[in-house]
Image 1 (cartoon, rainbow, N blue to C red):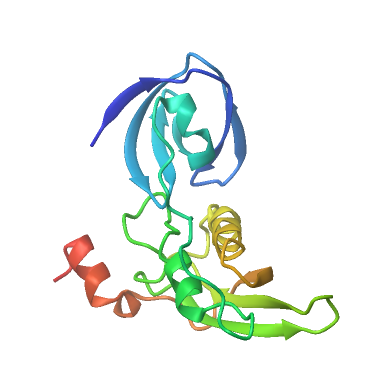
Image 2: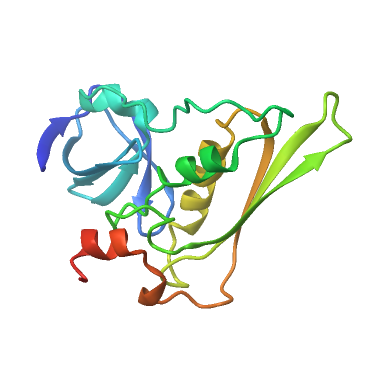
Length: 184
């Protein structure tokens, strides 16, 4: 999978594992290590970074459709919960090749009607955790989840909250996730 590229233009990337936004200049040489959920994990002479799919052209890549949703809202206008879960399956920790749902990081997801909006809208609330409390990518992963949820028809707002209770452990990984990680 490793592909060497030279950035064709400046991009703002997310440094791994700190989560800091860092500009990468045009002509920077990168090695693409992973493409998951519409983003790219790349290595430069200065470390690892995540580049968003919207900047795929700077890598000489075509943006994939991850994040695009084909689900419609339900008959009452509320978002389809299955569409929300599908979007969360497009969110990855850039260091782990398994989505946050199959990693067992998403503890809950609920949809609430926001009557104060005209027309009434729907807010999605997600409680999730990370594999380690010191993970600097937490805010970036939560923001990625929020942005993907907002693509679902009927969703007008989303709140992705990181919690540490209960603490995450490997037993929370789905069977599919364990297979991808070679744990079974």
